[in-house]
Length: 169
Image (tube, rainbow, N blue to C red; front, side, top):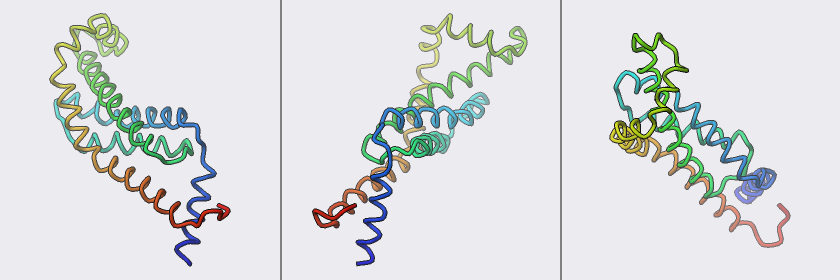
């Protein structure tokens, strides 16, 4: 009986959340971009660290949650998309740091950004391996976060099944 009461309480909180999944996607993307900052700083030193993919995924998941959107399988997709965007943004920021620190760039990030965007096709060709490696490392780091989201959505569905039909939630 206590378990059913806890399930009803949890489901009431879940029901009160927004169905605006676009808002959840925006939150996940913003969180992923914030989580990409450590990636950029570490990557600019020439390192890849899988747990930074975890940081991007945690930040993306938190961004989704801060938007107070219902947890569903969409959250897994949104966080995965945010991790991919975060890796690309982190790598781009990393390369802008490296380019801006070249003596002829005089530390100007705007010049570095303009240089990359003017030569974007060449930039992608030269950095394809780094981007692919970054995505692989990020996937390894993000796996547990995505697994936790899956467990949460499964738990919600199981709780719904425990509540008799017609019960006011």
